[in-house]
Length: 384
Image (cartoon, rainbow, N blue to C red; front, side, top):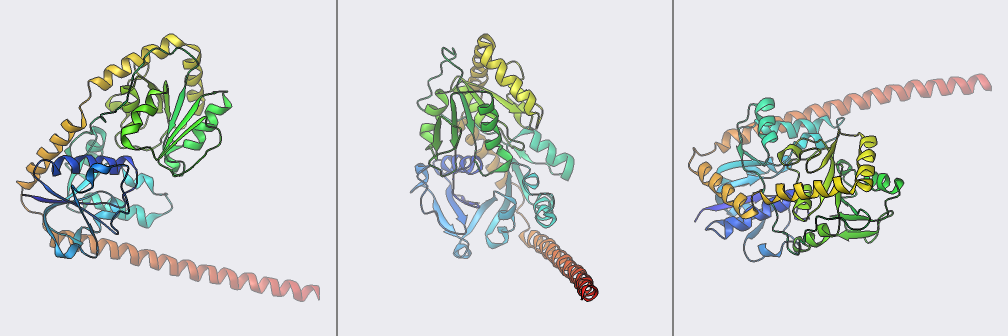
């Protein structure tokens, strides 16, 4: 039995963690001994209960006692944890261009994140555009396994809008990339009366929404989608756009920005409406169109469901993931000694450079302070 581990940054609800859980569940049910490695063991994962008793959870402190056939890093931070784990193969599951999640002014983190792509680790990614992005920008030839579509329980698709158009917003309220507050404000300013918010944020209420769905279990998400006609998701960065496809499956359509990844299944004017990134005026135009043009809305919804019905299931996607794992297992073992040296050397160089910049900044600020203090003293002297 092959032993496989996923290093994860947390166990909270998120699209990326859900994808890993899906693959882990499938692998564990098909002959793999699956582990999760993190700073702490999860206090609870009630939002994905199928993993309980199926996989093993290990902390960084305890991981030294284990060895694996393959270990996956799942974020740029977890790549730097790979040297802690003994394994034959080291793989990076890239689900998004994480460097774009980091503020431009934080050059240290951006450099550390970007270096993970060229550190010599094997890479698996989830979207065609990400595979091309990694090749074009870093020379990385990544394995591709596209995500599957949730088996949405209680998803009762009704393509015909009978009453006023119902709008759903999805995403964390604190993640600036999701643009949730701005989306709700936009809909509210247009007089939309039925606004739902589906969020992974732990909140009890949120201004401007008619109905709040916070920390909804996976098996209840289909019910939420089914209650709405249009998903308005204005993310500015995505990997593989999951929620619009889920909305399609439940009989709805979507308005989004043209972030990379949307082209996997979204076609403007056919099954959805797609605006240029940050073009809120165009989004307002599309919202108004769907409120006023019931025929257009219903056409988009019918075509959207057809697109969703032709998409592969999660079982099919995880079967492909397992085949990819088996392909990598058959390749040459990873050179962890070389990978470790590269990671540590680059990490320490970045930290040293950052420390030097901080020292230079402190010297500069001290000089400014000395000059400012001298001017204040001179000013006081001239007054008195």
